Image (cartoon, rainbow, N blue to C red; front, side, top):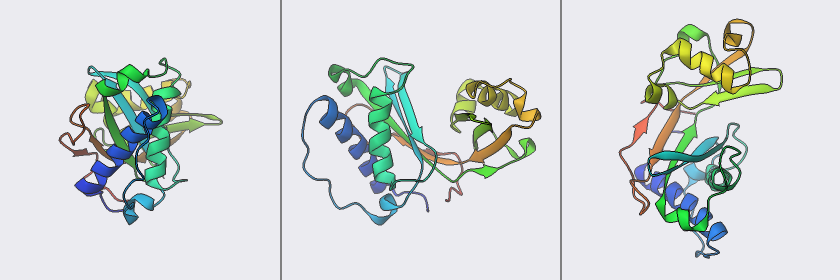
Length: 198
């Protein structure tokens, strides 16, 4: 999948917001416009909700199971209602939310020395445990590669050195875009890799 155009990004953001408004405000929307072919391709994605500059929910689908536009709608609802770290979003909060979408490339097995913070996201897995961190997390917190690996292990509820002890290390890139504010529109776009491809 090549990088999404600005129009395709806008449509995904609109569909994510519509999903929240339909569910939480019982506000029906007309049928969406025709979905362009890139958004009907299967792809993994995460939807992150921000409120007043803070995290309000984040849920994703790693595997490319559903068409991208459906993945985004389902993840938007999951971020609002099913993130165990937060109470469900209340109807009166919707107008204050800013939606961020991360469209994921496929996972690939990687060696620790191949990881570039700010470019790669990480998934660490061992047995049934796995932890994922999006590419934008390491720069946000100023983590180097070692700290990024440790934090991914901790998210998987594994010892922080599990990446040295046989845990599987996988990387991915993401195309990340968000609303400029609750009123919609696009913020400045940032990709974790300029050569983003799936």
